[in-house]
Image 1 (cartoon, rainbow, N blue to C red):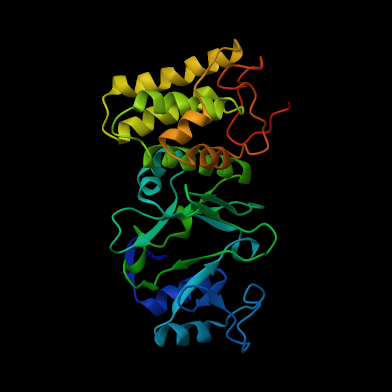
Image 2 (image 1 turned 30 degrees about the vertical axis):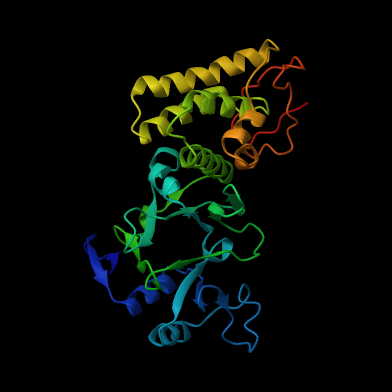
Length: 314
């Protein structure tokens, strides 16, 4: 079911599939035709250069009538639209705590939205991997015309049902967010999603200490990480005192780093969940930040108070 904001009275009304496609064109969004999953250029035998080709409305409608799916290209070609594409359940559940409310999309058999659509001038693509290399979440965006897209209503997923807008397609609901702010919000959500996804049933005290050591050693803001811990622990149904204990572990770790004391870090975290330390560091955008100090406190350097993904001068 596709719902649209009626221009005459402001109410939401149900749209047929062809009406939804026409609405995209009326809003000057760049519509794509999709194969099983990926876009293709219907005017070339090899399907290439779909990023540069504009599909005519009648051709998109004919493709849909034949059972084909529809996408929207992100970036300047669609008025700087971009979308947070949330692949895992933890990200979908935690999203309202970390990324701005906006127009949302999902699939009919998914309880929670999996796409948050924004307008962000100059915003570039950001993909974040899960432990093991699978997709965790991505910001589908394009600052250079390279071509990133999202599948949208009235498309149909083979297992999860029809794509839909929630509560309905309304361009006025799309939030305008600065590119840097949006990247920061997406990284915070990714960090929280990873921590929640691998939160153990037992041993959470050591788990929180190891996360604190892994990220604070590379310059992550302990205030921010403490707040992430509280939200994650609450999502897990833990008593508030447990969330506060996890936050305290972050602050204790930051203090110990400042005082060149021994802290728990990535080595311990990888013993708890192999590969999680690297995944968190990449999610935070801190790969290039050298880990100062060590589990034995080898170097005396402060855990600088910087926002997620900010560079650290070492």
